[in-house]
Image (cartoon, rainbow, N blue to C red; front, side, top):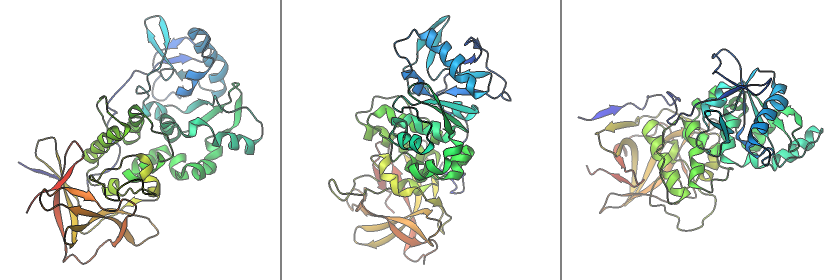
Length: 384
């Protein structure tokens, strides 16, 4: 029995993240471990960047110094340590695993403390921004969820000196540098209202040079992705997109990517992007309603079945209508695809461009076709 999911299924973040590590709290007075505070008690959290703070010092001494010297500036009695340390009974060890970092931890905290190991202190606001602009923190994948999820961020120089500039005072600057809208930076709950392509665009300037780095995006989309040894970053990114299509089946903005230059053939043998940077042009995209709604069909197997509006353009060429647009334009986004007659496999044609179409065009040549998306990322269309 097929089950059809409506295109009006919401696109919001729901539920909990797939991998849950246990948060660990300490007192900022003496660094002693404390039980998890009640939800109404505000806490701070150390960025993972503090793993690079005084790396040669004894781990317990480093933990206590971080709590009593640096977290006390924040004005909260408790600080979250699991980003930097792990505990086994009374033993404390440095935390090296990045995949334990939870988006929800930063949302829970009132303030995130970020240590900038490559930024020297300056009391000049303009100079601080110049130095922050070249910091690894603005390029590292795992720092993106800290910027998005944290209500407030305090920054510390490589010497451990507190900067007067904070996330809230740098909102306009961050918007300019990252292309993330101020309303999203200021109100982290707004992340869940952004379409897939827009969220991906925020990652376009980050450096995803290992398959593990792709896992940093799971929390931003709140999806599960099994731990697996991927052959390449490209393979890991394809797996992530498959999970996004499963969860947000009505959001076709995931296909709105394009490349800015040609480093190979213009066509693409699957509809999935190879890297977050291919979404760089999507920072302003929003979802829109279209005449022929998108729906998902469940058949109980590992494939994804989507009914998507398609317009035949002649021969093997077709226009795939995407339900997304830029707010100041009347036209929505589309991509040109090729359907191979023998296999019904779908290819992206000319990956350097997207098309435009009227949101409610004449429907004579438009009809809904069933796309089959396989776990490998290969896409076919069911024969009529």
